[in-house]
Length: 344
Ligand code: F6P
Image 1 (cartoon, rainbow, N blue to C red):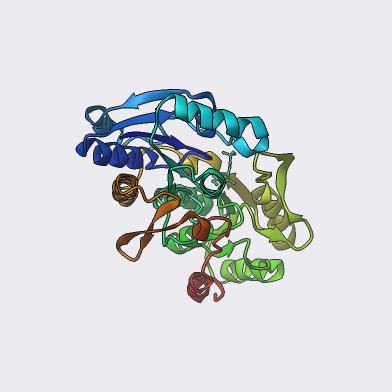
Image 2 (image 1 turned 90 degrees about the vertical axis):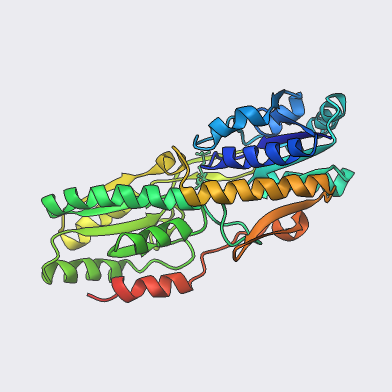
């Protein structure tokens, strides 16, 4: 069996763990694996490299993806889908493992629906916003990066008696901000799923200062909306999948807090740091397990499916079930976090 794989969308810690898991599982049964370079772009161009199990032990701890990635959407141009199918046939592949977020898996789902394309999906994103899986790999690494950053920012915030606003990624879901907020004893957390109460936030920060706390930590998800400004975006540009680039709420918020509270304020946008570097142990294990199970689905020719984590088990579900729904933060986590930050 000749199996191709690709990684699409934003890179994410432990993509290489998944690749290694698929390669090992397919090779163990006598199959061959190939990597398509730079997401769907490589699939369209037929740009492939062989992947051998002996070479993949070295990639487990590497961040990013050895295959490269892109946000190319083959469905944007009708001829690209045809080219993709021709390249796939020319290279003699029997199956494709598509590792990516909702956009990448959306293409996989459509290819399966339109042509019965032999594809299996693996859900990926630091945002943890994919349906049908309890956690996506990359999320754990990302919240650890935010946590380490806030631990460092806290000491300088305290030295200068400042409020520090930390802007996190997460797109339209507050998983990263909320979990990082809990892990760092943040004074306030802003997420996209709930209306932001600026009055309350400023009052909490002022009351805590009056009670003797010499600094403040505010964690704001990039997709949170401010009552006056709405959604803050860096640019109006959209990618191949129609997503606007988020970013900028940290600065807006820092200005606002300083104006309203009189407390000196600084902001830090963690940006792509949250996706970089070696994956955590949790993500290495999760990525490896998802890769193994994706390989097994391919061997069993269970196409149009994707792997997922439910509880402690790796299960499978149809791409049709899993794709196209943004999984918002479970607000129970916010209610737990608020036990701390809504009281002085
Ligand atoms: O979906 C992952 C993510 O990192 C989001 O959290 C963020 O909004 C987006 O990708 C950034 O994308 P890019 O790397 O294209 O700037």
